[in-house]
Length: 117
Length: 115
Image (cartoon, rainbow over all chains, first blue to last red; front, side, top):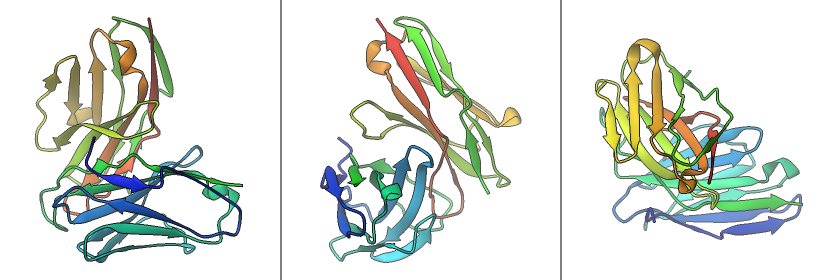
């Protein structure tokens, strides 16, 4: 058990809908990362938050957004869902700060499996 | 831009065989971290090892060992005396220092160990 929790484990929804995925980082970790794992694209970085602020963006669609709350949990919002958004969405957390010369390991949650029908 | 290549899509071995998973990376940065993660059939991503680009010493942890060679930009992973529980998808990943430590993953290698 990595200490990172994600809810829900599974989500089935229809095209055009909006969903919210939730992540609680390991105790003490300030950085949260979101990744998408799909069959065609593999594992891709979406976005990173550090202590409530957005720090890095990857291949995140404009229909997707995220935030990190004062208690450090994070939510990933996916809207106007398309069939191609079906994937496993991972949250990871790490203890590090930002931009330094030393990086802590990212520990991953169990993922949320999203199926868009 | 960084890139990680895991050329072996799938490997099948019989229990107790040794198996090596290849990882080749590309980056223009001189300082970076390399990682291996395991994704068992249950789906979670499990951290296995992190290696700093300054540290080319090989590492052994039980039946697992890692061979880091900067000259060939490779970070290979060997499982000795494989077991059925080793069946999983294994991912190699890279992050750049300094930076925001986002991970660039390879496509993964599926390892199937049969009894």
